[in-house]
Image 1 (cartoon, rainbow, N blue to C red):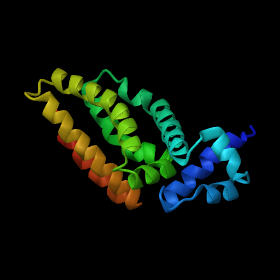
Image 2: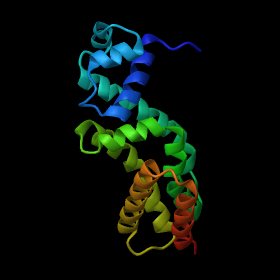
Image 3: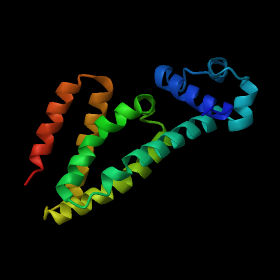
Image 4: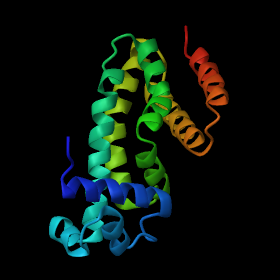
Length: 177
C-alpha cells in the first residue's frame, strides 16, 4: 500500500527525532529526507510542535492497538506477566518510537500521552493486585510500573536480549504465587 505524503512526513519525522532529537531536527531536514517541500509540512501540521504531537499521537495509537490484548487478561498473574513483557514486545515492534520517547522524556507533549496510555495499564494492574489479595495494590502497581519503566529503558539502550530476558524472568518469578 502506498503511503501518502502526510504519512511519509510522519515516518521521516519519527526517524529523525529518534536519531537526532526534536530540537536538533529542523523541518528543512525532514522535508529533504521525506522528499517534500518544507511548505507541505507546514500545510499539513502548521508548526514543528504540531508535527511532533502528531508523531507522538500516531505512535501511541499503534502502541495501544498492539498492547490491547496484553491487558485484557483476566488471570492476575498472567496480566502482571504480560505487563512485564510489554517493554520487550513494544520496543521490538516500535524501536524508533521508543527511542524518540526516550529523548523526549521531559517534554510535556510526550508526558501527556504517556500518562494517558499508562493510566489504563495501571488500572488493570491495580485490579490484578486486588484480586491477588495484596495489602496495598496501589503501591504494588507503582512499583511494578517503575520496574517496567526501567526495563523499557534498559532494553532500549542495551540490546542484549538474553540478559534482558534473564532479568525479566527473575522479576516475573517474584510475582508467581
